[in-house]
Structures are given as structure tokens and as C-alpha cells.
Image 1: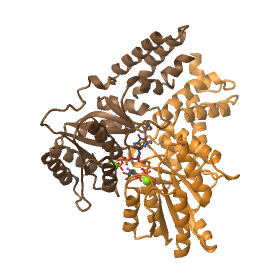
Image 2: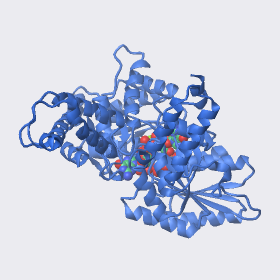
Image 3: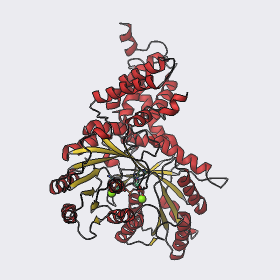
Image 4: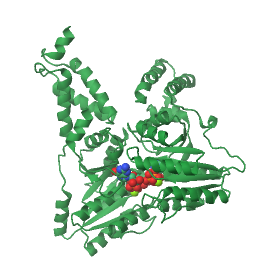
Length: 305
Length: 268
Ligand SMILES: Nc1nc2c(ncn2[C@@H]2O[C@H](COP(=O)(O)OP(=O)(O)OP(=O)(O)O)[C@@H](O)[C@H]2O)c(=O)[nH]1
Ligand SMILES: Nc1nc2c(ncn2[C@@H]2O[C@H](COP(=O)(O)OP(=O)(O)OP(=O)(O)O)[C@@H](O)[C@H]2O)c(=O)[nH]1
Ligand SMILES: [Mg+2]
Ligand SMILES: [Mg+2]
């Protein structure tokens, strides 16, 4: 019956073995919610470290102590350290008579082009004028896809067809937007695998050459353990393959397909944890209005449920 | 969670292997057999493609209709062309039908791919009913004596019932000989529920796992196999038409277990 006492009231100080069962259960729960294994492990380690040696408050269970510490950690991680206010920054750029440039990057099929169109719609709602730049010059139908959105939203699109250097197309698009007085340029890029060196080099060139105001990583909420690799390698390759001494990295995250995952919301945590970049938008459907802000509280609640 | 149930048997098999002093082909094969047995016990049908009935057989004078389904962006449209191109090289007369009237640029994408591969295609910029297009396309190509008619459909997910109903209707109207579920290798824990929902709406008979040129191990694909009780027949290994391989269990399992290539493993 000693174990019963241990779980109710404060014995001396908590040590690792006291915490282990509760932490193991918590790690498993996070993983079934689609948090990457590596991230769930690291989180549990840091929670253990924060509790070890502490006294257990009387009348609390170890599991609820661990849960509370985890909740605190999750809120801390998911709450953006640097907040980016796009609308404010757009107006600041406007005062300098420069268009505000956003580049959408990510692996294949995650929703870059569709969510670029949603962001365009959102900007239009805020009376911001937009030009789209069709810089996916590789994938079949990519230019027509963007053209369709531009037509529906009645905004200008800069395109040069296929097989052109996307870095140059982006440059010309920005020049054109400066001429026609657009407030924002949204640059679509081709999907690329994080390990594909030539494609990552081309992306880093596009970013170096055009120095955008915002590098937005688009990732899908469906992704499992690969989320960690995608974000860390995009950052690493953007740094390593850039010819600039101060290379640009991922500034923010757009998390897509949030409507397809029920309560398996863990990818949000994996992505933010590994990159330190904030989730700026959440895509939750296939129409223009399906763009939201991340609700940190509800994510944390779902993760711990 | 399929993988959790599998975990025990797989780690036992690996344990046995690491206990062996010398790792040679024999030990390796034993280990692989253990793992395959574990997978089979969990309804995961990992068999090699050659003993699979799901493989479309060429019957003289008969046309096979194959319908592609899957989540948004999983790689259906790209894989349709790869599948057509693969069979074309084997002497088939394939054709592509674009029954995706939803996604912007969907028809252009299929058209450009088909043109590159010199495969006849059917679709419309005006018609918005995918069922109508699918039926027209299949009829057209039957008349033209194509023996493999491939129907591409829109991406969809189980949370939107109307999308699943549409898929059911396309399937009912075209009566496909095979429905292929296309799945992205990077998918995480949502894989099982989504795959199962697809299986419950249409009779999925095979799985193709895409983007295997990425870094993901493809564990989610295991769940899909378990949920659909259908074998993996091909994998996609790149964006180009010929980056497409017949599925082979050995490299897949070794990658899943993070062991890299078997050959590389044996050198150690
Ligand atoms: N359910 C759902 N589907 C989405 C969402 N965002 C995008 N999609 C769908 O995902 C599919 C792929 O979207 P795209 O915008 O073409 O993706 P991409 O990243 O530009 O793809 P590539 O350029 O080929 O790499 C399309 O069918 C979109 O409609 C979302 O938030 N929810
Ligand atoms: N690297 C890599 N990319 C792939 C592979 N298969 C498909 N893709 C890419 O994944 C993206 C999405 O492919 P699509 O064929 O448009 O996917 P889909 O399922 O038809 O998408 P929706 O119709 O919008 O649901 C494109 O950028 C493809 O080029 C693959 O095996 N490897
Ligand atoms: Mg795109
Ligand atoms: Mg498609």
C-alpha cells in the first residue's frame, strides 16, 4: 500500500522513477494525437527536468502534476515569441512605396497554391491590393491553377509559362507590382522534397535574389513524423545553400488541411517546436474563406484530452 | 494504432537479430520473415505484386476501368499518368479521364501530363458534374478500343460527406474493375481513419504510396493497408512520369524500421 500513499500525498521529493509511468502515458497520448515521436520525447524530458526534485503538493496525484506541467510547456511553445502582424507590415512597406512580398514554400501537394489564393482573398477583404506571381514553372497545370484563382478573385497575375527560372520570374513580378502599385506580391513556388538538393538550391536562390518580407512555410496537418524533418531541413538548406552571408530562414507557418484530421492536431506542435516559427494561418477547407488563426488554447486542450 | 500492436513482434524479431553474432543473409531473411508474419497477423497484406489478383490482367477484347481516389494532394493525378505510362510500355492501350471538376487547373494538369506521355485524354472546362464526365469519358474510350481507362477524381476527405457521396456516384456510374487508393508516404496518425472511410464508400482494391523519394518512412501507409485490407501495388518515387516502381516489401520494411538499405546494413 505504499504505492497508494505515494500517489496521493506528498512524500519527499519527486524523482525520475516517480514520474516515469505518468510521462510514458502522456507521451503515448501525444503520439496518438500525431505529435512526432522525437518531439513528444523531448517534451516529456523537459517536463521531467522541471519537476524532478520538486515537492509534490499535498493531495495531488503525480499524473495531474505532470499534466499541469505539460500544459504549461505546450502553451509556452505554441504561443509565438515573435508575432508578425502582416497588415501592419504591409502598410509600413506601402509607405516606403515597396510591395510587401510573401514567398510560399513547402513539399509537394500540401496546399501552397490554394492557400496562397486564400491569403489573397483575406488581404482583399482588408483593402490590400495583391499581385500573384506564378513561380511554379515546373508542375503541369500549376500556372493555369493560379490563373484560375486570379481570375476568380479578379486580381493581376504575373506569369511567364513553364520552364523559366522561378527566381527571375519572381523578380520581374515584383518589378511589375511596383509599377502597377500593388501592395502585396504573393509568390507561388513548386513543391519540393527537403532532401532534393538541386530544387532546394533553386529555392534558396529565389529567396536570396528577391529578399521577400515573409518566407511562409506551408505544411499539412496530415503529416506525421516527417514534419520535423521537413522544417528542420528547409531551414538548414536555406542556410547552407544560400550565397548570402545572412541567409533568410522560415518566418512563419501556414498549417493546411486542418479540416481532415479530427483531434489529431499534433503536427501543429511538431512544426512550431522544431522551427520556433509561429503558425500564422490555419487552412481548414477548400474555399477562399477557409483560413483561420490558430487557437492555442483549443490545441493544447485537444492534445491533452 | 496498428504500429503499436506490431511493435512487440517486430522488436522481438530485431532483438533476435541483434543477438546473432554474425548477420548474414540467413539471419536477415529470418528476421524479415518474422516481420512479415507480424504484419500479416495485423491484416496487413504485404505480398509481392506478382501473386496479386488486384493486378489488372489483360484480357483480349475486354476493357478495364481503374478509378483513382484519395485525400487532397496525395498524388492521384500525377500517379494516374505514371500508371498509364507504365502499362502503355507493357503493350496496353491506356486512356485518361479527368473527373476532377473541382480543383483549379485540374484538367490542364492531366492534359499536359497526358500530352507529354502521348496518352489520349478526356475532360471538360465547362461541365461541372464529375459523374457525367466520367461516364462520357469511359464510353468514348471504350468505342476507341482502349483497354485500360483510368479515371482521375478530386481529392476528398471523410469529414465532408458530400464529397464521399460524389465519389460513390462516380464509382457506381463507371463500374471500375479496380479502385486504387493513393496515399502520401508522409501521412501520420490520420491515415487509418481516412483510409477506412474510403474503403467503406467505394471498393478500394489496391494502394499506391507516393513521394517515397522524400524522407518519410511510410509508416502511415501500413495503416492504410490495414484499413483497406488491400495490398500496395506501386510506389511513386518522384515527380516525373517514369519515377514509379512495382512495390517490393523488403526495401519498404527496412526503410520503415530505419535500417536503410539491406545491402548497406549487411556490410556493417
Ligand atoms: N481539405 C482541405 N484541402 C485543402 C486545404 N488546402 C489545400 N487543400 C487541397 O489540397 C490539394 C493540393 O493543394 P495545392 O494548393 O495544389 O497544393 P500545392 O502545395 O500547391 O501543390 P504542388 O504545387 O503540386 O506542390 C488541393 O486539392 C486543395 O484543394 C485545406 O485546408 N483543407
Ligand atoms: N517528389 C514527389 N512528388 C510527387 C510524387 N507524386 C506526386 N507528387 C507531387 O505531389 C503534388 C500533388 O500531386 P497531384 O498529382 O496533383 O495530387 P492529387 O492527389 O491529384 O491532388 P488533388 O487532385 O488536388 O487532390 C504535385 O506537386 C506532384 O508533382 C512522388 O512520388 N514524388
Ligand atoms: Mg502549387
Ligand atoms: Mg488531382
